[in-house]
Amino acid sequence: MNRRISREVQIGNVTVGGNNPIAVQSMTNTDTMNTMATVEQTIRLVDKGCNIVRITASDEKSARNLYNIKNELIKRNYNVPLVADIHFNPKAAEISASLVEKIRINPGNYVDRKWNKDFSQQDYEDILKRAQDNISPLIDICKKHNTAIRIGVNHGSISERIVYRYGNTPLAMAESAMEFLRMFRQMDFLNIVVSMKASNVKVMNQANILLVEKMKEENLALPIHLGVTEAGNGEDGRIKSICGIGSLLACGIGDTIRVSLTEEPENEIPVAKLLTEAFSDIYENKEVSNQAKQIRDISNSARMLLEDKIDTESFEKNTCYDEELTKNILQATGKKVFKTEFIACPSCGRTKYDIQTALNRVKEKCSHLKGLKIAVMGCIVNGPGEMADADYGYIGCGSNKVNLYRKKELVHSYIDEEKAIDMLIDMIKEDGKW
Ligand code: SF4
Image (cartoon, rainbow, N blue to C red; front, side):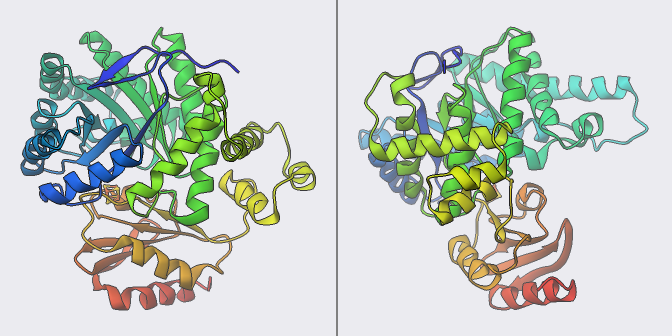
């Protein structure tokens, strides 16, 4: 296996891509306005081995507070590169770009009109042109401050315009990134990392492979950040992340990674470190521990399953894993369903309720619903879009308040959390699925 060699991108004191070690990232889930809580969580992440820390900048005020967070970290001798996570707010991106080392934007958020099926090719191009005009002030600031950008495509929030043309597919995800890469290249800005994230491991795997092919066709070799979104918690979340991220590292793809878990962010780092170690003899010529070798075996198994190089039956028959792990790998790769699938975001500064407890409560009550997908999400801004193709959604919308969804339909809004579980169960019973 050869590593895909990408262009080097400097993110503060960390160089990503090229022959550099795979960088481990995570994200704070504190309120960005709470400077001390965010600084302390960042420090806990760095002390565990996190190389790059992302912080949500949901509005202009929290974007400005990145200045205080950065200063406090430097005062305490933590010069870790920070990434501002931006959704729907170009102004917050522009403010953050002069304060932190990287900005993460979602191309799906940079379109200005809802797509209408009667639009022409010219309308399509006009929308793209306006996106370029909207983003150009940000690029100027990034050039001036040497700030990198991550183009972060999420399966749950591809723009309607792209979905209309390519369907809600891995190809649509790759194209969504390529449009922006072409645009950025025209603006002479290639200080970019790209990511294709999905909660579905197969979709995430295929989108990244397509992205690599498309970049190659167009002579681009930008570094890739890997992650499975809304992977949930516990063993399920870890196996899902290992299968998604590991299956690509096993192909030589990936320059930075994040294992997203609906737990304390610090818990993500040991799993991510094991994943980077699993391939470090190839990527960095280093010894690999037995535990990391097991992670590599799981990654290779996931790759074989995802690429249909081994069928489910042979895998079950010949595997050396115990029954539980075998089932988890098959479920994570979408090959066989053994239990309820829980989709849950890791939460971030936008989360205003206790998502970790909520997820555990939902799991406790609904774990017998084999075949159902239930999402537990942290906010109503991105939660409904990002909860993938879940059958039911339990989404925090304020302090101890929840919205309940059946597929994409909002069924109960702003209900007390104490009542939410029973109401969710009633919805499932009404549908005859309990
Ligand atoms: S869905 Fe979760 S991780 Fe995404 S923005 Fe909302 S709270 Fe943050």
